[in-house]
Each structure stands twice: as C-alpha cells, then as structure tokens.
Amino acid sequence: MKETYDAIIIGGGPAGASTASILGESGHRVLVLEREKFPRYHVGESLIPFTFGPLERLGMIPKMRSSCFTKKYSVSFVQPDGHRSQPFYFFNRYDRETVAQTWQVTRADFDLMLLDHARERGVEVREETSVQTLLTEDGRVVGVESVDKAGNVSRDYARITVDATGKEAFASKQRGWRVNDPYLNKIAIWTYYKGSKRGEGIDEGATTVAFVPEKGWFWHIPLQNDMVSVGVVAEGKYLTRGGVKEPRAMFEREVGENLWIKDRLSTGECTGEFWVTSEYSRHSRYCASPGLLLVGDAFAFLDPVFSSGVMLALKSGVLAGDAIHEGLLAGDLSPARFASYGAQIREGVENMRKLVYAFYNVNFSFKDVVMRYPEAGDLITDCLSGDLNRDYSKLWNWISEFAPLPETLPYGLPLEEVAAAS
Image 1 (cartoon, rainbow, N blue to C red):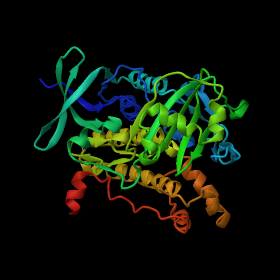
Image 2: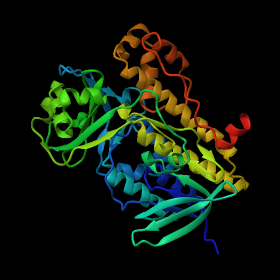
Image 3: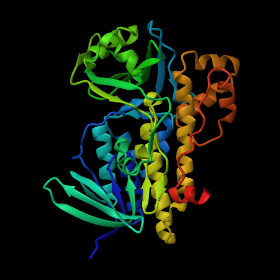
C-alpha cells in the first residue's frame, strides 16, 4: 500500500518549514524531507521589518523575542571615504512594538527554531534524506523517491509535493524552468569576525551597507556572541581585476576600498573560512504544475542587497500553506488554484527587483530621487522594508527619470494556466 500524505515538502529551510507549520496546525498530514542535519550553516542573517507579518502568522514572535538574536532597529549606508549616513530607524515610520524592531539571526539557530516549530505542529521531519526523483503518474507529480544516510530508498506519496529546496531549485532545474536574471549576476565573498567594532545601545544591531567602487558593496551584520557577518558583493570582473582569484585576497583588498569597513574590522579577528557564491538572481518560469508547487528561493531568488530573501521565503511559505489548506478542504489542488499565490510572490519580487536594478545603476542615487520628489522617500522606505504587495507605479515613474528600470519578467503563473492561455 502507498503511504499517503496530504503534502510532502522537499527542504526544511524557512520556506519549507513555514509551509509545513501552516499545514500542520490545521491537522494535515505533512512530511518534510531535509538533506542536511539541523542545525546547519546558512548565510542570509538580516531580517527586514516586514518579516514580522509571516513570523506573527506562524506564531513565532514570542520565540523570537525570547531568543538571543541581536535586535535590529535601523539600517545605514556608508560611502567609500567612510562617510556614514544617518541611521534610518524603523520606528520613525512603523509601530515600535511590532514591525519597527526586527532581528539579525544566525541562520543555523533560526532555521532550527522554524523546523522545530513545524514538528510541534505535528509535522513529520526526516533529516539527512535526499530526494532523488519526483514520482509522476499521467503527467502529475504524486510523490518522491528519496534515500536516507544509510542508503535506504523510500517512495512516499502525497496529494501535493512542495519544492522548498532553496537555490538548488530541484524541480525547476529538473524541468528546465530555471532562468537567470538578465542583469543581476554578482559574486559574493564573505566571512565572520569576532571582536570587531560595532555600535552601542540601539545601534548595536544596525545593518550597514558600505560601498566600494563600481557599485560594489559590503554588508556588515552584527550577530550575537560578539560575531559579525561581513561580505562583499560586486561584478566578477571587478573583484578579479589584476588577476586576483583567491577569495581571501579579493576580500581583503576590498576592505581597503571602504574606510569605514577597514576601521570596523581593524580590531576584529577573522574566525573562519571565506565563502563564495555567484549568479545571485534566478527565477522559475512557473510556480506550479499538476501536483507540484514551488516556494521560497526555489521559486525566485533575488540579489540580497536589501536582505529580502528570508522575508520572501517565509511569506511564500505562509501563502502556500494557506492555499494548499484551502485546496485540500475543497478537494481541488489543480495548478490554477495557485495562480493568486504565484502572482502575489512575483509582484513582490518584481517590486524589490526594480529597486535593486536602480541601486546597481552607476549614475543612480536614491537621494537624488527624494530631492526632486520628497514623497518618494516614504515609498522607497516601505519597499525596502518589505511592504511589497502594493502599487508603486508612481515611484517607478519617478525613479525611471534617473535610471532605466527592468521590464516585468513574464514568470510565475502555474503551468496549466500558461498552457491554457496560449
């Protein structure tokens, strides 16, 4: 007999765990298959203000408030000469008790909290289990074949399978849906420092974006236990200029290109390896097909300059969980049922993507836009903070006077819907 679940979720990161939690709290039978053993390392530590909504929906806010994670109240920008902007404090725009205070998280701990939260809601989790194949019948995904660390092969079946495999994008790569962004292909090199300089009081947990030439930038993210995550993002041809190819050498050279970063790291000690990743921004042509739904980075992954990744992952997981729950109750999990889900996530990605494109334009400055159009300041702040599902057409009209903006990518509909429309 086939052992049948309501949903099988491939991947136990933020998108997968949040999808599982929503379904588990409603009493659905859910299986999460996770390749790694948690806690496991992951980059992407800074949460933006509107992460609060999905965390609240999941019931995670009490756990976050009692955690050891560094509280984050602001963000600021630093020029190469070391001149730092005044911090933007979120409470000047948002409610101090909710959206205006977020966190800098160590992802190993944060992701484990989310996965354990799903377990508490009755979700079955199998770690150190790799999915090998999507099982299909008559063109519909009906489950997965996986293998555990002992080599045991299992076939599990479900009414719907959710791909939450992050940048690995298991299903969309396998099906040829994965496409690169036309422009946003950067390289990042990062590491961790202990004992480096940081702000005090309310500024201790501030995110800082520090610029280097040719629109490259450092992130500086204070974590708990006197640790700092620090990395540089830029075009590969810039980072490898002069034939430099060793990650540490590229990183250390760029430290000298921003006086603020150089000063901050002058008292710290690098604690580990240098990590490298490339080709940040990718998209899936479709959000769903019969029996299959994509969430989080497996659906879309955007350049991390504005730290939108975890928020989008959690939001997509919550929206997907609610959509699947409604479909299970209605006895209808057809791809068309997820058209609204796909449209909401793509709208958010496209809004943030426009700001990212503008940011990387060599002649663009948000300050110039606000000087000409003072109303733009609040709109830019809201978008950067993660309030992504709203009409920003006025803002795009203003920004397009200073920098070309990308056309909206024609992605995100369910496959069944696209086929019907054509």
